Amino acid sequence: MSSGKKIFQSELIKKYGNLIGLITLIILTAFLTKGTFITPRNLINVLRQTSVNGILAVGMTLVILIGGIDLSVGSVVALTGIFAALFQPLGTVPAIVLTVLIGAVIGGWNGFFVTKFKIPPFIITLGMMTIARGLALVFSGGQAISGLNEKFILISESYISPTVFFSVLAFLTLIAAICFLRKMKNGQFKEGFKISPISAINAFFMLAALTLISWLVIFRGLPMGAAIFFVIAMIGIYVLRRMRFGRYVYAVGGNEEAARLSGINVKLIKFLVFTIMGVLAAVAGIVLTARLNSGVPTSGVMFELDAIASVVIGGTSLSGGHGSIGGSIIGAFIIGTLNNGMQLLNIDSFYQEIVKGAIIIGAVLLDRKK
Image (cartoon, rainbow, N blue to C red; front, top):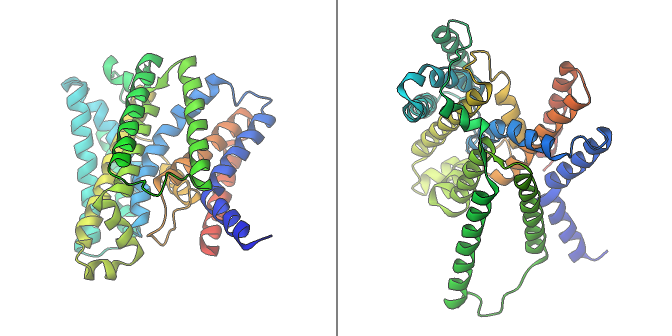
């Protein structure tokens, strides 16, 4: 085998290994469940179940990219869910805004102690995990808070119609076409427009994903929770790839001292990352509360581990500086597929935790090997 082919195969496995793993897992789960898993109704259910963990995984990617960790997100999901339920008399919009602000304060609190007093993120977020869970029990009296507004429940229970979905998709396609034509007009393709094998594979997988989502949308519509997740994911991908803040995040995680010497405000970047994590934990809490139709103080248990597992499985290095939100999204769907598949197979929940723990260890071992 020529060296060129070896390099291409190595790059292919490195770039698409987790996606190939997801596809293999879907095929295996579909076979074991005798096709039940790949029915439109169940796949929509997987989308709804994965949306909360996916939102958390986007924020956790940023935290791990700077070399940090956040163990408090599960408890913050529960606490913000309680506040979202308590704020219902104020109306849906004020309840959402106030809940998100509380999430930002909690995330900022973590970031403040990490940057100001240089407390390891593991310690401060471990403490916040206990504090937030205790506050959730205190403010709820240990009981679920029900009686949510109908408009608030629509955050999770409503569906985006095919007409709206395909209209938005057509608009985004038009914007992409305009940007491409402008690049051609500005002479960015003077040497000719060439498509590399990796770019062709990227286009294929994107087209396949859009086709699958379109099929599900035609069946019933896109769940609102999944739509919120996709929007947050796209914003996160854009920020990391195209904005200065994203480059600073990678720089801080890759070499904090070098980033500081190059003029990057490392403390501000870390503070903002933890604040964003708090905001996304609040959004996840809002989506979960709407889905449960109540604020439950015991919800969100082990959510932080699912989010961390999604990020690590997605290829983000625990050492920081390397990874992507796209990979974390794939990792979230791997966790979601595992959870749903094991439920369909009636596997005891105790064994489900063992399987997920083994997968986390395997993903970390692969990260160390890299």
